[in-house]
Length: 215
Image 1 (cartoon, helix red, strand yellow):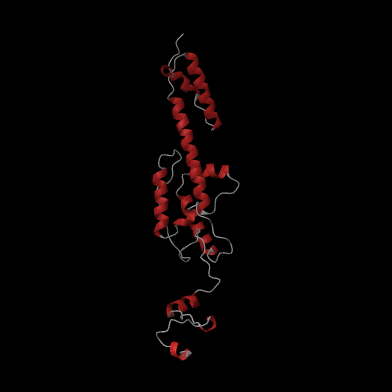
Image 2 (tube, one colour):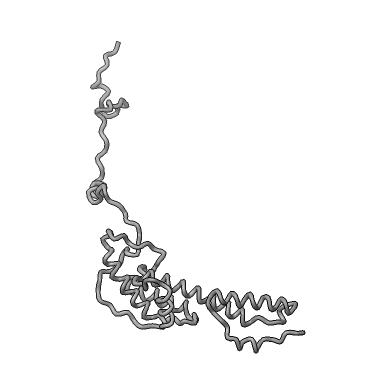
C-alpha cells in the first residue's frame, strides 16, 4: 500500500480544494474601495424638480420683448420668447408646470423660490394689460410663481382661441349653407347661445347684414 500525505498533494498543481473556513476571497480593487468610501450607505439620488441645477441667486436684468396680445394673435411667438429668455440664464425650468416643485425641505428650495419670483415678474411684464385684468378677475390670488403664471396664461389663451373660433363660426353662417330657413334659424340660435356660454354677445346690428330669408 502506498502511503498518502497531505504534503504530497498540497502543492501548486493540486486539484484538492481547501475547507470553506480556509478559503479566501480576492481583495477589492483600489477603485472599488474608493467608491465605497465616497458613497455612504445613505446616498440617494434626488428626483428632478424645477429646482434642479439652478444657478446661485444673483441680480440680473431680463430684456424687454413683445407682449402677449389679448386678441390671441401671437401666442406661439410669445411663448418661444419666454422659453429662450429664461433658458439664456438657465432658469427656464421654474416656468415648466409639468415639472414638480421642490419640497420646502429641499436644500435648493430658497434658490427656486427666488428665481421663480424673478421669472414670474418678467412674464407678467410681457402681458397685455387686458390679459392681466382678466387674470386678476378670474383668480382669488394673482400668480406669484412662474409655473402658476404660465399655466394661467396658457389656459386663458386656449379659452380665447375657442371663443374666437366660435365668433368666426357665428359670423360665417350663411342661409345658402342650409336646406331651409328653419334649419338656418335653428343653427343660428344654437350658435348664438354657444357664444353666450363664453359671455360673448354679438352686436345686434350684425343681423342687418345677414342674407335675407326667402319667403
